Length: 109
Length: 114
Image 1 (tube, each protein chain N blue to C red):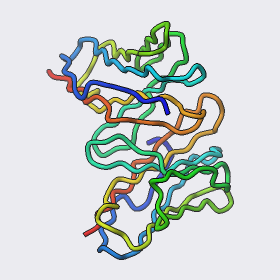
Image 2: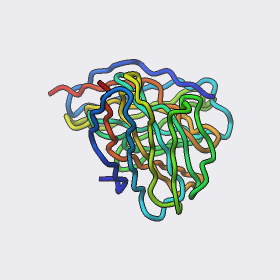
Image 3: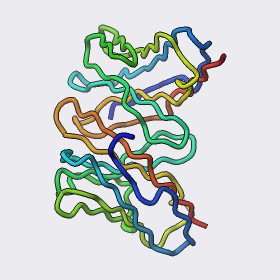
């Protein structure tokens, strides 16, 4: 199984960009990287995913290094509602996720 | 609201009792997953269904756990003879199962075993 490493917590000022790193050095060539977030007492919410190209949607941008061993989720203008635990997870066997412990992002006013 | 509903939201039971949780996925989704999440940890995979077939079970799923998905629609997760270590959030997710595999999660059932 490809495993991930994320910092346990990060702080970000409201209105600034939040850059959340993830190391997935054992990811295999056909595994996508997915990012989810979980706000307290809710189920995980899908944010974005990618294989090897950078991706952007209405929520965030995803930067994947050329060797695919790490990625960064960018929230361009963080708000207080973005305070959550963020998980990066490879899709293993095109099927199940491995979530790890995630990064607790604290957005401060 | 993702469209995946779980019932009940909270369950308190005494050790040794049996409990059953229900998950209603998004109607056109053919894959359904169960995860377990303990405090401070990310969700851990338990099992998944492709339509009504249970295709994979984690070794976390002991003999006391059983899951079904009759007719490929809703799913139930039963825990027999509950133990205090079963206390956790049980999450259900569904997906169309194609390459994008975006899993949509329910709000979960929080189980407390006293």
